[in-house]
Image (cartoon, rainbow, N blue to C red; front, side):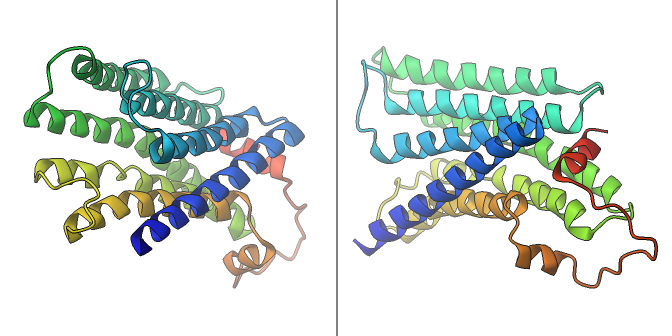
Length: 264
C-alpha cells in the first residue's frame, strides 16, 4: 500500500507541475505573442492526459489495447515538442525538423503496427520483437528530447557570453539539462524487457526500481522545466548570485525580448 501511495503521489505531483507549467506557457504565449511557447505548453497539458491513460485506463477499448492509445498520444506529444524546438530555436533558419519528424513518425508506425498485429490476430509477439519495440521507443525519445537538449544548449552557449543577467541564459541551460534527462525515460523499460523482469512486481526489488525510475525521470524533467519557466524571485536571485551589473545600466530585457533572442 505504501508503494501505491508513493507512486500515485509522484504521479499526482507531476500532473500538477505539468498543469501549472503548461498553463503559464500558454498564457505567456498569448500575452507576448510568442506562439512557440504554446507548443510546449500544449505538450505539457497532453502529458497529463498521457499520465491519466497510463494510470486509469483499464483493458481494451474497441478491441484495441490501452497501449496503442498511449503510444498514439505519446507520438502527438513528441511532434508538438519538435515543433516547439523548430519555432523557438530555428525561426527564419533552416532546421532539420523534417528529418526528426520522419524518424519519430517511422518509429510510431512500427510500434503501432506491432501493437495492432498483437491486438487483431493470434500473434502474441516474441521476446525479440518486444525488445525491438522498446528500443524504437528509445530512438524516438533520443531524437525528440536530444534535439531539444542540443538546440537549447547551443542557444545557451550563445547567450551566456552576452552582457545580460545570468538567469536569462541559465533558464535555457535548465531546459537543455532537463531534456537530456528526459530522453532516457524509455531506458528502464528496455532493461526490464531485456532481462525479462516482471512489470511493477512489488515482490521484486529490481522490478520496482525500474518502474519508479521512469516516473522519477519524468518528475525531474517537469520539476526543472517548472523552475525554468515559472522562475520564483528567490531562484532568480540565486542564479544571479555574484553578478555585477555594468557601470552603464542596460535596459532590462523583457520576457518577449528574451524569447526573440533565442530565435536568432
